[in-house]
Amino acid sequence: MSLEAEEIRRMSPEDRARLLSELKMELIKLRTQARTGTLTNTARIRTVKKNIARILTVMNEERRKSAGGGGGE
Image (cartoon, rainbow, N blue to C red):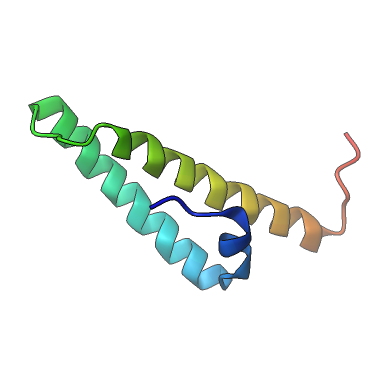
């Protein structure tokens, strides 16, 4: 299940934080399965990592927006 950025933006900050926590726990489990050789869907690790990155990106965008800066780097 791949999440879209717009889908994440529509979530409340609490929902984003909860989902981020769940995905991090799932990634830990998947990595453990990969080490023990019981992982069947290796592509799931990549999907979970990308979803975590999307959530963190949206959270950082929201934080920067609320800080009043536009980012002009």
